[in-house]
Length: 433
Image (cartoon, rainbow, N blue to C red; front, side, top):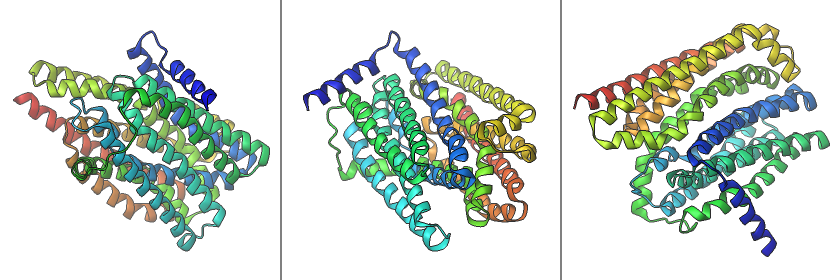
């Protein structure tokens, strides 16, 4: 017991070691975003070679489902918590709320797997893989509330280091176990176990320094307030993830696991555009909130200037990604995943446009949350989700991967325009005062 605690103290000291907290936060947030973006494609790179395209298709839909379930666990409260600079709620309140949402996440995951077996012809093995990948995301959902507290206390660098270590070891566990056993189910189970252990030695151990207690508080008034405050953002982010993955769900329902794998391989670069653009989203939340709450015209103009710079950055990243996709994208993907994708160049370029639009939509939703106008987002996401639900089955059934790609790009663009309009209108109204 003493040796285990000593190891935890040593790990925490290593995580906190830095000469410049602010610079470290930016650097490690970028590394963390990159590792998060690479997690699925790196696993698929090995799964396609060891288990084949069928296993790759199963893992792809499992990752898509778990990403949707993750937003139930998160309940959209990370940005709210990180920007709670006046500490309206205590960590024990956020922690209690996270216990509830994580329980709901697991219940929803079990429900989805049962539905898959009953109506989507899931085998018990496929359902088990989907559920275990959801358990991986459960660890992410819970550590997020600890990391939100660290960020609130000015130590985003420690939080991102914890996540980075966990991402690396989760992926390593799947790859090594796949090489040894060749069994995807066993590999995902081992990875889930590794994830829990790493969480205890990093996030939980380090988090003790930034909160009074890990004992969750379930005070009805606070839980009710967090439920109300978080619901608009939760609904928006949940619908956002549904919209992003709607083509995958349609492919899972109507086409084969091999086609699912192909779509996910060409979708990866677009998803990475969004995740990589996020690497400066998280560190700016607190500074944006402070500028917004300052109440001075000068500070509001500075906020608007920073937003314009960020929009240009996302545009540059999207154009760069599209240029790479149109030139060397397909040869690179074919080489990386060991699969001939030469017939899918047009689909890749279309999906890349959708990825850039998703990055804009995610950024606008972040700004809208900071200015506390998140209720208006539900309408935008509701419109886009309804369109995705109607169009996905029709387009995927009729045009396969091309239909999925076109639908994704259209829906993401419409969503970005709607959210952008809300953001600009609210900022202009503030500047007029």
